View: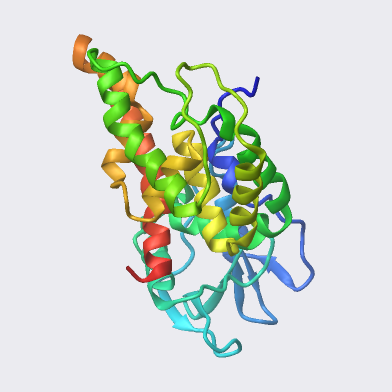
Length: 297
């Protein structure tokens, strides 16, 4: 039987460290994590590649004074982020092109509000999503689609007991039934709820339709769907959030439902449960906010 969708570390949504590039030289005073392109006036955001790794808490010195958003004069209709007038590049050294002004300004704000003494890449989740959509999604799309389809059979939105009368069963019914009903109705599929936590195979016709839906998303949309699905362990819930049917706070609670009920019963462990909540808040909020900025809603 398929196992539950595994948690992905922050590193899994980041582009790999780039190789040395001719035409790029070390940043001012050889600062770690950034490089400047003298020939084309660009800056590579190598710092973001360290997020989620063993050196997650490390920082890179801030080397720029201002971060701004601007229209890309060489690509009509696209926007970019500039650090002291130089275009920002992804870790794989591609210019970070953004589809609209809202996303460009939001990512520029992440860079602008870094400490005057250091850059903390782990505080820039929108930047991470943008580099993932640019560097990773185009080449990893087929593998990631297969992963989502493989784990749909054990999606929490399908595996819950509908026996009213207990607190857990009532919470499952109230939380997951609207998510399942919306997913089936909106996509025209027939995913069946299990009467236990043991997953069972879903109709192949519905799986095929889901594959078509996922492959039809553009890179920005798919990145948010995939990253949010891994955060909440549910494609059904992720789509409800991104379509505005479930709020961010509702999704955080539902993704932690069993643990939250235990907290209500036995109390919260400080330095444990509260940290987990804060981490989940970022993991859920980032793709949800990114998609709203992308859609202009």
